[in-house]
Length: 302
Image (tube, one colour):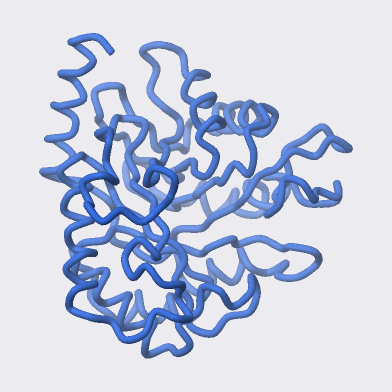
């Protein structure tokens, strides 16, 4: 890294820490809002009906179709899964066109489920075709909000390829996540952040087990120590220039199994409230309707 690049990262980190600008309406986002093996065909529509402004889709490569398709498992693609255009852009075209320019609208989290270059190149081309409605991130860190904001997640190699596809000097058509090294628990929270945020890598994305350590079903009562740890994670992330997102917090859902369930709505709501009080920017959940009611009834933190 050149001295100029290093200095620009320092300046960017300080700017982001002072005012991260993450929209409060994205606090709860619809985890895996797509069908899988014939189930959940209405998940994207449900998320929007519930009033959620942030949704997540997973992408894999279909050799049979020669296209990127929406799938949870890159190794079990059948070929009949919908494409990003079929499932997202066509159904939501009118909604996106009606949203005002210059303001944050819908957040789309795109998970690359492998390092296959096909989905990356297809996403880049698709976003370029919809550039007029996108949020863009300039090289100096300035954000130009649009009706659709895209954040890339999951596979680091795929994310790196997307960054390379952006011509020098051009703004990024999407932003990206960083995650804890090895996704593992760190006793020293400073070890989660070996690198500062950049105009491209803006979101620190972590499994909730980095807060409570035990799997959600075994987490037990929420404690003051866990609250303090979460607040420290958020504060240190912000000092490095990151927005923050945790995944996945559920109550009793079964769509993607029960491994993310806390067992009751009361236990889940306690954690949502604690997360917002700590300044966490975004939480993934499969409890769409509960999330919509929470967002409508409880005052945003800003």
